[in-house]
Amino acid sequence: MNKITVSAPGKLMLLGEHAVVYGRPYIVTAVGQRMRAIVELTEKPVFQLNAPDVQVENYQKPMSDLGKDDIPKGAKFVEMAVSQFTSEVGKTGIKVTTASEFSSQFGFGSSSASTVCVIKALSELTNKKLSNKQIFDLSYKTVLDIQGKGSGFDVAAAVYGGTLYFVPPGKMIEPLKIASLPLIVGYSGIKADTVTLVNEVLEKAKKYPKVIDDVYTAIGNLVRQAKKAILKSDWLTLGELMNLNEGYLSILGVEGRKLADMIYSAREAGAYGAKLSGAGIGDCMIAVTPAGKSKAVTKAITQAGGQVIDVKANVEGVRIEK
Ligand code: PMV
Image (tube, rainbow, N blue to C red):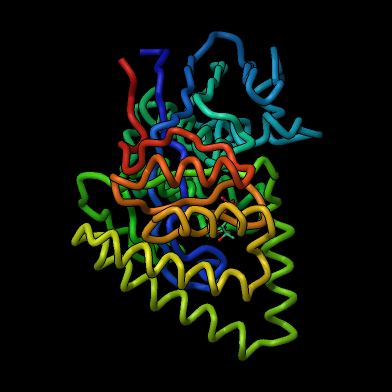
């Protein structure tokens, strides 16, 4: 075999963002919008990449130059993922084509999903047949080498799929076995800058260490309770815990006016609970909603200026496509 197609899901953080960076647990769900990669071993020792979703077309360089020189932003994750396998592929080249079912704007984790796809594909093509934990570790290392920071939750969702309770940095990865998750997702239209927001929260923690550490601890506690609620499909309790989590995110300063409007509108329209998902200020908010209220909640989020995205939560992790 010298060619394979692999896909991996995007993600949404359900609870625990920011506190996770300081070791507290979080819960993430994999979403139905997937990243796909076709990976091929070729004769000439050249790396080729086509990733039209991020404006990378016919990007090429010798395999021996992988990771060197200025790498275009859209090529970084795939190139660094490929570079983990240079010794295994010997003198052959590698051609990668990626295609995403979702806009990289949503904050669904397209970079991590493409990293995971490439590592899974090369693990198969080189017959290494890595386990999911090994794929997680190698993908997380690749992402950290590029970003320097990050809890790896998007990598975990892309590898394992489903809904995960996770204690960083991979100390415990527990799949939460549930049949479904009644989520409504609203996109704010604002791009969240994760690294900037993580640094802003860090500054706040330096100034008010005791206060902010207590906030992280409180978030960790509510995440542990939310895990129990999810396992019982107790969406009312999950919603209430999401509202508590949002309060703490507001203390951290990452709520943002637009997201707050969408979140409070969703609650007023009958959601059990609503909060931001991810770094905050922009990207998406999520609402846990009783079935009978989903139309009203959708309308309320739209009226608050959000775009409701059709998202299936709790989907399968990385997989080989036929
Ligand atoms: O905005 P996103 O989807 O990259 O989420 C960031 C979540 C943080 O907890 C703020 C950072 C992290 O790496 O976990």
